[in-house]
Amino acid sequence: MEQRVTTIISHIAASHREMSRILGTHRSVSTQMATIASDIPDSHPNFEGVGMLQEQALQLTKNITAYLNSLANLEEAIAQQTEIVMKEMKDP
Image (spheres, helix red, strand yellow):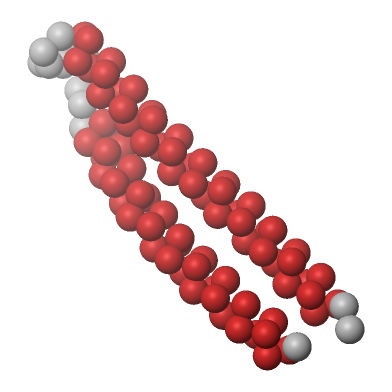
């Protein structure tokens, strides 16, 4: 029984590593976009109009929100899987 639990835990850990790698990639993209946004001048930006500026700001906000939601989903998945493993280890 302990061997099965150990195997399950190792598969869960591999899954979490993969999710962390994906989230790391999302973090890099969001960080680069935020850096680009911080380079935008505060006054009289030379864009294709205010609409384009608003569209880019909206896209940046969506990417950051998606990244934070991914972190929350990862945390929830880890908690659920840990709960299952703890219940399995508790039962004789």
